[in-house]
Length: 433
Image 1 (cartoon, rainbow, N blue to C red):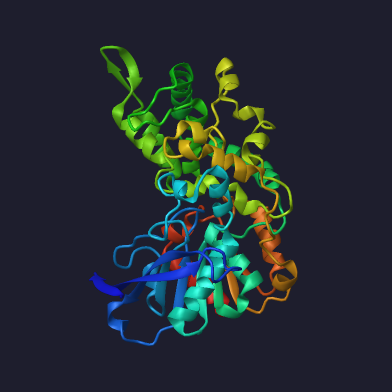
Image 2 (image 1 turned 90 degrees about the vertical axis):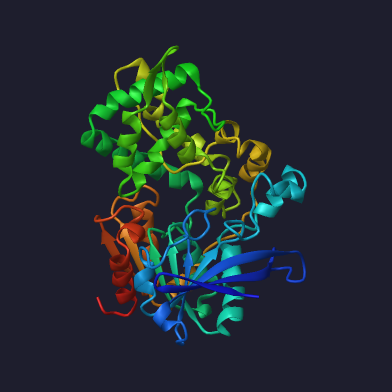
């Protein structure tokens, strides 16, 4: 049974689909997918083409929009939109510390999670498309990791696509995770330098906080154990359009004077706990490096190993001298499965995933070179999350792909730029730009 209801200017319909856990075993175990259909109120009965949105991540459910927020308003001018919670996220058979023990021990959990990468998500999309549209083609909009899924879609099932739009999500077709992070750390360092240029007072603030954390390793009010490496990882904010400002405001009220002396304020602890906890999206931490696995080599905690090659990120060394404490960005480390109570029960599962060598290829360069689907991609000039050089190389490898390279937005451009970004990319798929 489907349920429809209304928000300002839109009609929403909850939809649920049963799909195989392993699409190669269609008669085996199944999982449930949840998706929200959205259509403009004045077009609710119209015969509209479909657009499916694939969220960034991995590990995040689709946006919960209210009305016609962000890019959705532009999409609803001509599409019926499906906001899909990718498998394991949102309301789609969630995978987390509460549910994964139902699979058995860490090895069974790790085996289960190997089916939560882009290839499985795309096969889910095809199963849903046939049931929802009667086999009609649809357009896919992939943001960040959703763009990675879109490139897999173009590699494995392009016959299902009318067009493809990618925002900040063109992956390298053949890079190992080590290559990804060797390129990432210098980008992150540039973002930190730009932040300190904008807010020079934050150099000393970050040093004071890092020194306090290094000395005390406080346990935050929500149970998260704050290490200096965890504090540095707040630099993930710097990849968003407003992130530098958000980080500045967070740092300026870190301390409060109490009867016991100077300590971290409750407000600082509350915000840091919310930013660092993976309770709402544990798949991000569990399979983040696995999204790069495809060459028979283990990812083996790549971000942690590669970081050792960049000693400028060592906070203790920075504090021993007079240099700035550098923040880090989008990377997952083994210590997160010790500091975060939402991840702690899954640490052995995460280690087993990091050791796997049986990852299958995600992209088909030959098929991409012969692509016939109209494709457009926004590439952000100095994207902290996705390497620009890797993205441009992939863009050249996909026949007919049209790019919009811009420094107007950061990685969250499709949210910040909203209708204008989507309008520009849709026009590129139609040769109208």
